[in-house]
Image (cartoon, rainbow, N blue to C red):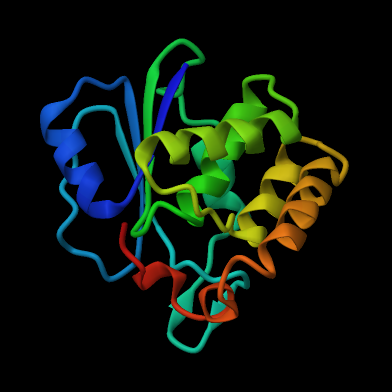
Length: 173
């Protein structure tokens, strides 16, 4: 499988100009600009790590289950996953897809880090609510949650806390 994890703007160019087998767009509920394309799943939720916060709507377990069970996902295909910044929601979903197709949680995380490094943006902050749902759906018995918790411990000195607490969904590549 060849996976790309991109920001919203870079994904638009990719969708218009590149070959792919499946594309997953994870966008805010109020985004009206995204147009449907071939083999394209559009899922709408904000980048928050709870069900609801003020006017924001977080991911639901049903949404994550729908992504992981989407029949267009193939282990031998070219997959694009994107959100607004390509650092949180799409990263978590990318990790989940890789786990679904047999990678261990640690190997999936390392693969996503490499993918983002190849894109020129190695900073990732996987959405932990999505990670929790993936762990439950794939029956990983907290292994994925533990891997991501350990990864987050490495971020404290290198990622500004404001990035972890506020508006990751507004930061562009």
